[in-house]
Image (cartoon, rainbow, N blue to C red; front, side, top):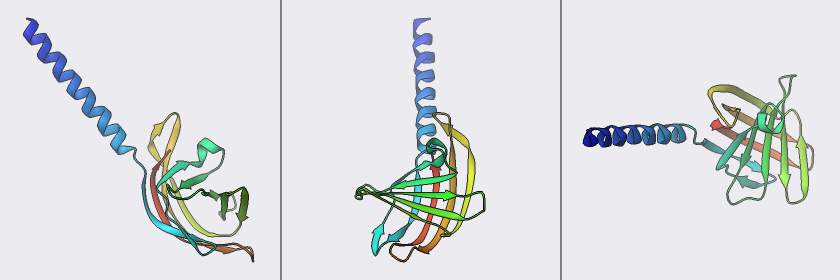
Length: 138
């Protein structure tokens, strides 16, 4: 009887660990592409849904860069880019196209988002251009 219980417990533990791994692996950020911001390349390595920060869109982070890039989908269907870092905030409007979709999964009550952006904008001083595809941003 004890042997049967140990086998059942071992199977349940393995099933639980597999489910946890599958959930975590399925929620890993997936990013491709890069941006050029003021002649400097920005390659994102992680992302967050804008929902957690109070906007529709995505925030991109790069491991080797102190900047964060927020790509905001405005109700007018325009795309706005906000570059944060180095003590400055750069905000550019009419930056291109963003396709943004909510996914079925949530992490910490934040719905994952996926999509892509094609950006090209300037304010006469700052320039942002490039394309990014993102998935599982929460």
